[in-house]
Amino acid sequence: MAIPTSELQKINPSAIIELFELQLIASIHGSDQLYRWHSGSNQNNNGEIVWQGNSYARFPVEAEGFEFTGRGQIPRPTLTVSNVLSTLTTLIASVNAFTPANDLNGAKLTRIRTTADNLDAVNFEPVTTTTTTTTTIADPADAETVTYTVTVQNVGGVNIFLLNGVNNPVITMKRGSTYIFDQSDSSNSGHPLRIKRNSGASYSTGVTIAGGQGYSGSTVTFQPSYPDAPSDLRYYCTVHGNAMGNTITMNDPNTITGTSTTSTTTQSNPFGTPSSNKFPDEIFFLDRKIIENREVVQYELVSALDLANVFVPKRQITRKDFDGVGTFIDA
Image (cartoon, rainbow, N blue to C red; front, side, top):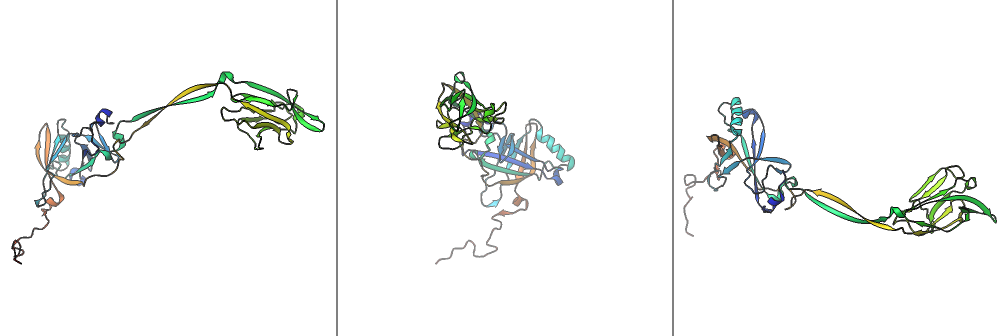
């Protein structure tokens, strides 16, 4: 479940997020099920928390007594878990059916602490950004479709194009319109009409060719686009060059303004880039069930070192071992 925007204002990027993992051991509990919880004590915890792709369900959990003193026995924290829905009682009964009177003892509890800026982006409410773009386009109402009947005539030993009976005319076009050169007449055979730049470069954008010159249905259709069609164009014969053809005067059409709206939805951690950064894990084992009732189940926890009866420091040096311990020597 995403964190509502109203809740985001309550979170400090460095707020401690406390997570718990309870790992059962198949040989003891009949299952190696891993349970992931968060205590729900932080203001941003609405539903589950996702960290490093793992989901931690919201579940009332309270852990106390994790502080190390640096001397003597390692602390034995307590873990108190809600049992209002008999969730733990049901789990304990299942485990005890496999190992009588086990009560989940020996299950591994890992306490993970990270900060809000390390949480996965999926925890936070998606943000939708709307962008409105204004564009100017050719007015469809101003578009025209013009057809030129093309024939070829030899004048003074030179072939020329006739468009609607006019020798090599300068023609005027409008961007956004359609112009059809009909070369069906047999005189067009061997005289393919095309479009090019005045510099000599061929221009094929918006040009559609159908059929072969001199045969029925042979056309060259040109649709100069708005606003991109260049102004330095001409029509010509690819066999005989510029002698057949002339320049094209290109004009802009009437235009209209249109708007389009696009929406983009993104999900991110507003406090930083999610990462695996965390405080050192605190690993304990359930050692003794203290309380079980309809409201809570409470356990005493023990560390792996304490299970082996190890002290901190691991070995204490006493006067019995070294006579000089505790003795001050004058210089």
